[in-house]
Amino acid sequence: MNNPYALVAITKHGVEKARELLAKLPGSDLYYMSKFARGDEEEKGIELFEGSVRLILPDLFARYNGIILFISLGAVVRMIAPILQDKKTDPGVVVIDDRGEHAISVLSGHLGGANELTRHIAELIGANPVITTASDVQKTIPVDLFGRQFGWEIESFERATPVSAAVVNEEPVVIVQESGETNWWQYDRPLPDHIRRVSTEEALSSAGTWNAALVITHRLLDEAETQTLLANGVLYRPKNIVLGIGCNRGTELAEIEEVVQQTLEELRISIKSVRNIATIDLKKDEAGLLALCEKYGWPLVTYTPQELNEIAIPTPSETVFKYTGAYGVSEPASMRSAGVTDLLLEKKKSGNVTLSIAIVPGG
Image 1 (cartoon, one colour):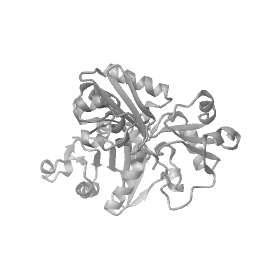
Image 2 (image 1 turned 180 degrees about the horizontal axis):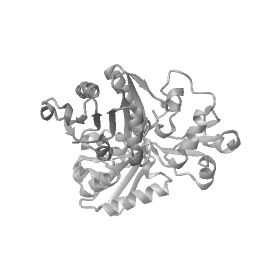
Image 3 (image 1 turned 45 degrees about the vertical axis):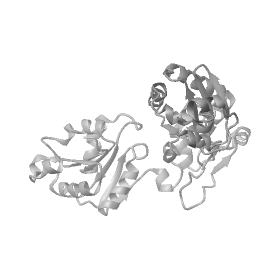
Image 4 (image 1 turned 90 degrees about the vertical axis):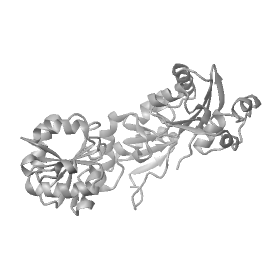
């Protein structure tokens, strides 16, 4: 089974509620005790089990992103305690009472998505969502989820807990944003007074006036910035770098990767902020490029020669046009993909690889 959610019930009324939810929640699998079988389980893809539900929970934890249990909260806490691993890997766990009146977010509310799942399930079955995470209750910034809707990646997770405490305890907090989407405040009220948006320079010069920092940038910080901003701070990498790449046919992964890594280091750019690779459609099956994308999880975006020629570039080439039908590959591909008219790096030729870099504007 490849569905993201597992529904589990162990009582007569729980099975009834779970069967109702199965019909309303796409991507869910249902498990309940065989003594409650109705004869249509095989037809509906429902799994029956014998013995204690405790025996199947480790397998469910390993296979599903979210687990919804129609079991008492106390029993669930006792059963899952021995199999908990880490908040970054444990699935979200939601408990629903036997009458379907309350949906309770129990485990991995943020990173595991249990809070969001709880709200969704409550809406589907008409239950009361119970969420106790402080940042959700206070409607403030969830540090471990900040920017997740945009694909931001946390690079320094080790300080997430004390920084979260500063946010919810209304201590002075600064947000230093150099790049990435700017429309991250989603609530229908102003940003709380204890949270300020400041420039990097302001943050460095006023370190004594704040207790925690949230730093959003694609740039590699220097030692002084790291010591000041991340002493009690969390660093986020927005996905705002587009790599435009052209290469000779058959260029190996190792050569392309070396050019990319070396260039990003020279420009002081984090590789974690790369959003995608862009190139000409003639390269859509280029093994080295595909291998690079697979290794780093980057999408490969391709354009026709006509689409690339619609972009004004700094260094058009008749030679490139002769072989590809486009006056450039790396430059117009990166600009078109990023939606910009200028480049951070116009064109770098190294061996069999040509690289250009564009920055996606903040939203």
